[in-house]
Length: 470
Figure (cartoon, rainbow, N blue to C red):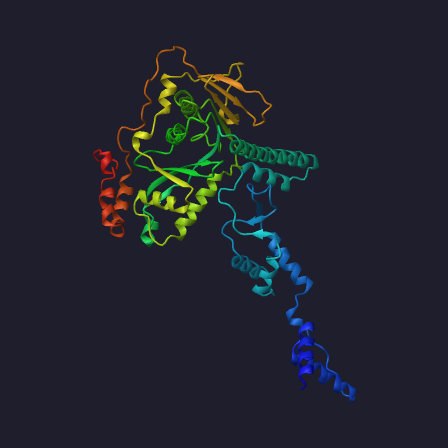
């Protein structure tokens, strides 16, 4: 073939995206038809066994939609993403479909249809709001139109309140970023960390020693202070949580005069009189902090930056090749998770008894300055000021325009107070005999360097053990 024709042919094929073989096939068919032969029909895209009927397509959709789905309370403001309940996966879903229909489509077709929908399987484990679920159930089950409207209004009001709290947190974060004298923190306790954490099957049948991590996240710098300790050092009540917060705030530089803190509304750890006594101590002892605001998110809608920190730690734990053999290993793992995570291993003498302050330094009253009853369950915002020592200001709303109520906890008889903040513990705490036995059973799987640590853990009924030996 002439070189010019060869070049023209290659350009033609490239322009139309055809191959040499496809052109030859077309030419053969045309020649065959020209001489009186029958031209074969084009069967491309006409093979019926590859097509899915509308009935089968709708059948798959109906099955997928028949499975209960949930909306994320944390990300509801930003996305309409739906989730199946934890524990389901696509293979399990297809098995349910096959068990229900006599002539099911192939698993590949089922998956293709599923992926067209805005549904996922993973749902945040803590993403539950009892009020949302109750209201949703009542709306779905009521037949009375007026009652349904009322329930929908209540549901919307609840969601609006949760969204407003998140927006307040966002605003306070921006204030901290733009003002050098303001710090904005969120804090939360991570789920208990098992120690040791081993890959051997024996581990899943034994009781571990629990290690705790209280995370305090800085909204401005995005750094996280992780305060860790184990259950023989201290518990995880209000005094223990408050001690970590106290250590964090007392370490702030003198350039900070205003602190804003966010937490969930857990009454046993965050929203109680012990935490209030702790904040009063910070106001009294820190040289520059003049105002502390403690704000509570709506119950069931308490996603904090700390949750992201804890999720990263969990991923690091899941993907690590080694094992956790000592509580200090958790400190190393957390520090290795991100350069923004600073680990503080708490000592027993750093846990203070703020409940003792309520007995000696303050008088807790149940009515405010107006004579109205004070109830913790309704409190959404607490304020502590250096100019108002012993006076707790509080609101039942996060709206700035709402006035504060005042609760005076100053002692009836001034002068009787504790000059030095007392510690919570005078000796190590004990674990149960069964837990001690399980920990000792795991020693063959643990480095011998740590055997004495576990052997010296005090158990119920044993003699006290010196703190330095644990």
